[in-house]
Structure formats: structure tokens, C-alpha cells
Amino acid sequence: MFSIGSMYGIAQWYMYRHADEPLRLGASFVPDYAVNLGVDPVTTMDALINDLGVKRLRLVSYWENGEAVQGTYDFSFLDWQFKKAENAGVKVSLAIGLRQPRWPECHMPTWATKMPKSDWEPRLKNYIYEVVNRYKDSPALDSYQLENEYFLKAFGICPDFSRDRLVDEYNLVKKADPNHTLIVSMSNNAIGTPIGNPTPDMWAISVYKRVWDRTITKRYFEYPLPAWYYGFRAGWTEITRGHDSFIHELQAEAWTPDGYDIRTAPVSELYKSLNPERLTNRFEYGRATGMHTIDLWGVEWWYQMKVVRGQPELWNTAKKEFAKSPDLL
Image (cartoon, rainbow, N blue to C red):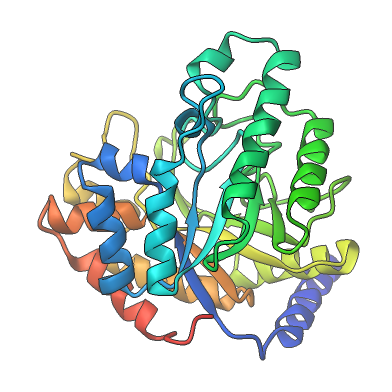
């Protein structure tokens, strides 16, 4: 009981300390995932900005896209996103490194998968440097997110989890661009606090509420954690590591059971995981953590549900929520 009371006290301290900060709602946007869902990524990004009203986007810089041919850099896939963001006054948090959002998590070019680490690691660093150098002067750039949930070994297909590589990449980015915030995300949803190096400018936390338990119960499972628990995590991290935290993935996408594809699963099944009412509650839960920067996860799916499946309810619900915070930046 004393431990719970102490955690709650830290959460309340954190919320009070940051109470006057503006709320910044944003979203992750992955063009490859939009394509996978069967929607045009350019049209999707336009809709996110012009219809949904998103003013902050987490974008990705997959190595497999930017250097599909060894030694040849092609940033056309990212240039058009930055141009749209710049023209619309949208701020960008740019994911960099090998491990970035969406399966298989580590987005390594085919040619690099055949190499030992001693060969692909310096080439990865060269690519990271090229990405940073290309976009560091963009007026849209707000921050970098280095190696998404780097130590999460239980999920994804990744060849390396060594701390030395993460530290080396951190130092590389800080040297190449000391003027922008550099973020490192924690490696799990519900427990833990960061230890060891590097110590970034900000920490990022994932918040997943309702998932499909494929191991034991074979049913949907709702994490029973109160919102203040994540306020405690942010507060404890700030006390022990000296820097603030934010939510870089607030689950707002259906988690489908085994045997279902999110693109084609019955709407009734998808809504067991995330329906419009749960989406509203998810926004409220995120705000109740006390963290004031919140990036939603699943916007490409909302758009696919609207334009491909004729189900605009999720999109319209999110639009109302984003409208509640018009001064986002």
C-alpha cells in the first residue's frame, strides 16, 4: 500500500509540475503502411493535415527505402512528406536508425542482411548521418527519435541490441545536429524505467490498452493500469534521469486476433478491440496521464476504414478530439 501511495504521489507531482504546458496531439504516419492498407499515402497525409487537423507528425526514414541500392541514397520518399509538412506548418518528429515504427521493426536493406555487423553497422551510421544532414535545416523538423524501442527483443526481427551501438548512434546524431531534441523510447508498455546510457533530451513511452492475448486466454485483454500510472512513470523518470517523457505511441488501432487481417476483418471484430467510443476514451486516457505531448498510433487505419470500407466513425471521432486542442504547438 505504501508503494502504491508513493507512486500515486509521484504521479500527482508530475502532473502538477507540467500542468501549465500546452497539449500537443500528433500522430505517427508511415506511408508504407498506408500502401499496405490499400490507400494512397499522399492523399492520406493530405487528409491528416487538412481534414483531421494534425499539426505534429512522427515520420519514418527507413534504411531499406533510403538506400535500397548500396551506396546510393534516395530520399524522394521522405522529401515530399517534409515539403507537405513545411507548407502546412506541421512539425515533424523524425524516426532515425535501424529500428523504426511498424513491422518488422528493423528496416534493413536486403543487401545489408547478408553482411556481418562489422560491415553493416558503419554503413548504417553513414545513412543516419545523411538523413540528419539532409533534414536538420528544415523548418518543419522538431526532433529526432532514435531507434524505436531499441531493447524490445520480444517483438520484431532485429539483428542487434547492443548498447554500444545505440550510444554510438546517439553521439553521431548529437554531433551532426546539436540543435534539435533527441529522443530515445523505452522498451515496453507497462513497466520499467530507463537505465544506462545514452541519456537523451526526452524519453518516449508506449501506451497500449487493449490487445489480443494469443498465449494463454486467447481473448481480448485490457490492461487495468490507471492513467496516473503512466504519470508516475514519467515522473519517476524525470526524478531519476532529469528529463521529461511523452507518449510516442498511444494505441488507437485495432489489435486483431490470430487469423484476421486488419484490412479485411469484419468491422464487428475490429470494433471489439477499438470502436469510436473506445477511441474517445483513449484520447481521454492519454490526457489523464499528465504527459502533454501525445502521438496517436493508427491514423492510417482510420483513413482506410473511412475511404475503403465506408466506415468514417473512427475518423470523425478523432477529428472532434483533435479540434479540442487547436493550439497544438
